[in-house]
Image (tube, rainbow, N blue to C red; front, side, top):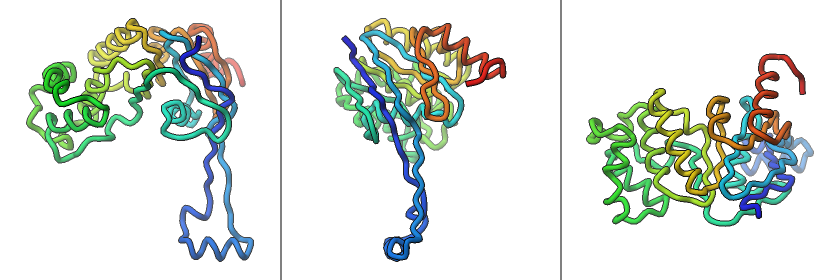
Amino acid sequence: MPVLTCDHVSIRYKVGDFRNIGLKETIIRKLKGSYHVEEFWADRDITFSLERGDMLGIIGTNGAGKSTLLKAVAGIMSPSKGIVEHEGNISALLELASGFDPDLSIRRNAYLRGAMLGYTREFMDEKYEEILDFAELRAFEDLSFKQLSTGMQSRLAFSIASLVQPDILILDEVLSVGDGAFAEKSAAKMQEILDSGATTILVSHSLDQVRELCNKVLWLHQGRQIDLGETEAVCDRYQAFLHGEIEI
């Protein structure tokens, strides 16, 4: 039985005058008939289902609608059309730097982020040293979060998030953080989570990561679902598209 189903999911944004004018001017323009609003569909009719233990890779060029779709799956936003249904708990790591205080130390930020993810103080006491070592930040423990490089911040966020054992795990470009050695370690950690039976969705621009980790792939382009299927077949077709060998 599927643990996650997206059924013809479409997500619409409205853009126009209301972004730049106040309420009074908005009302006046509506009365005059000069109010201008455009609709932008970030995703249209996206349909797929995942079973327990599946790892779905979502690929596509920038602006394909990948991150927007993840927000709908995670429950951060509601689809304009279609349905998202899931069984069990979802953990989503979408924006690595969110949930941190730039002026607090690594330790305090780790506990803060852990609390936001629902971890208890006792759990964080037990796991803090493990977080520090995995993120390779022991030598920087006394620095504030804002003094860390973007890669270091991402490593800390990933290390905290990967402590959980969710039913569904959603990752947006988090395996590409840090240097090559940390990327390999992150991939190994994801494989461990996958082996535990978690259903995982990974957005990545690295086809090598997708080929190595995922058993299914969804290809999006300009909000449309181009292909869904076995990893090698979809990745091969996408790579041919990038090289200009095929058109869609």
